[in-house]
Image (cartoon, rainbow, N blue to C red; front, side, top):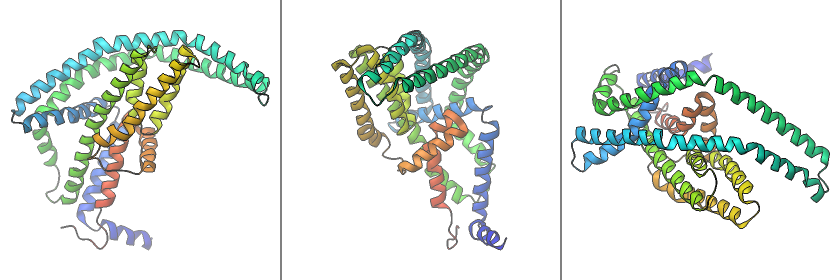
Length: 351
């Protein structure tokens, strides 16, 4: 007990560390226990962060903030309607077409597997049969899951409609009343909060840069992938470009996982041919340009984290909060890093 008491006294003797700990616990508890209920608020905050960067750049060149907010918000609504009315139906059509062609792909894949023992003596027909049987069981299980998902999709549809109503409204008020809302929130905090303010200023900058950078990265990678795949005549180019674009949300892992559907569609359409090689070559070039040029350019102001820390953050926060946890894995890891670096050491005094 004395060891724990001494440790607590050394690292929590300063009142500001107590305040920071309370704020972190309140934030964590809010997300854990009511995160699902306030999900539209969290989504709106992400979008407001994104649009705030555009508004601030327009204000910096001399425009009035209220007019900038109006213009940016109208463009946001126009983009939202284009996605809903233009991209979503096309995306849904390609998903339905892909599901319809899956039996054909599976039969071709099964035929290729059954021919392996003829070409490779160390592979037996019994092993192939076990693999095929396992695949059939997995596919049957996924089919039952999709059926149950379709039967329970009506509540999800109402939730989606609520999102489309609430999120644009909340985004507008977050932009319009940003200073007022921040002032209201700060009014509940103690006057002496230098440690918390220093960490917040750092993390706020990092999160803003990260969200805006990820948006442009998704747009650039997805757009380049669509142009390349459509030019080469690859099926499901819209669906694949959306998947490739959103794969950048999961560093390292996303690019590796999304390679499988791209390779599968390209192989079943073109076979072992030069067209298939071109598809995979262009896809590899896009991934290389993203990792070596686009990411350093967009995230030059974001704190560098070790790849191990990024992977651990993605696995940990993604396991806790799902998609939002994956999206915010790097900002949350940055928050943890900022807290560790700014936390007063026993020989330091926070004034």
